[in-house]
Length: 117
Image 1 (cartoon, rainbow, N blue to C red):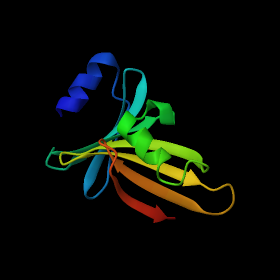
Image 2: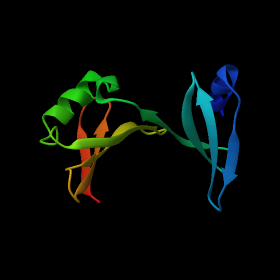
Image 3: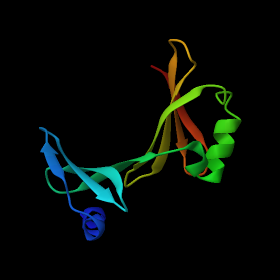
């Protein structure tokens, strides 16, 4: 709840959705939309936010992406996902045709997963 309380100082919590297993809270922090995920016991599971451009990624992630072989692909969107265990940057890429890939980088630039979707 600490993440939500800090966000509430700068803006109003917009919506709360519940599913059978998790609650999703939509809110703005510093003018940016974010999503927080909580168990029904109130335990924070993670927060997701949008990263607008590759230049806004940490330098280590920028470098790893540039060395990944996907720099000629269109970056459809970038998400920052924070969980109690880790922080990931997820890049959804398209090659301009029908092929989409998703790359998962840690904050220090390690590519932990690449998948074709």
